[in-house]
Length: 166
Image 1 (cartoon, rainbow, N blue to C red):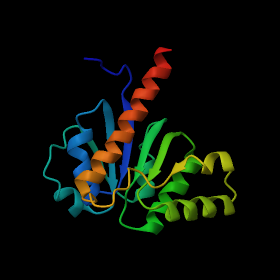
Image 2: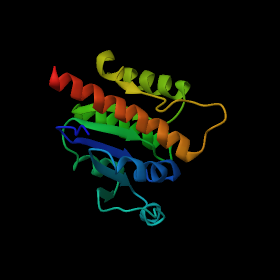
Image 3: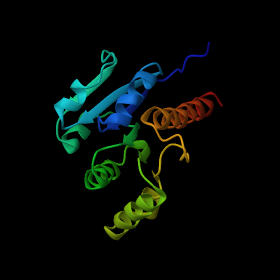
Image 4: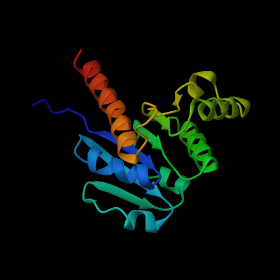
């Protein structure tokens, strides 16, 4: 059994049905989870163990303040506008290792275009990944999306470990 030598910080913005499906999976990984949403009721609906999760029930922007450097960011909120604002604030901080947003290729292109239009560098804007997870024609349940997002996170952690050990 190989353990990661470094715990990856993961910030999940949004506590809706996909994030609630994601939590029981990623709490088993070598990650330090920050779960941010401005709706207390969403956290109350989560039936799983929260002992491994740093829950931040606050404005999404305020939740960014508590995050460590080199954070893996997953933006899965209930609003395109909030998704965009969170992405912009994460890019402004510029200390993330990954920035992924739930959505479509069209949403991703729109977000990147808007960010470039606001003056962000191509290098920074191109790091925004949207959509996250593998799009499937039939399996679009919250759990299948959560598994797909987790697979990308596992690949990221594995690749990061390879870079450390080389």
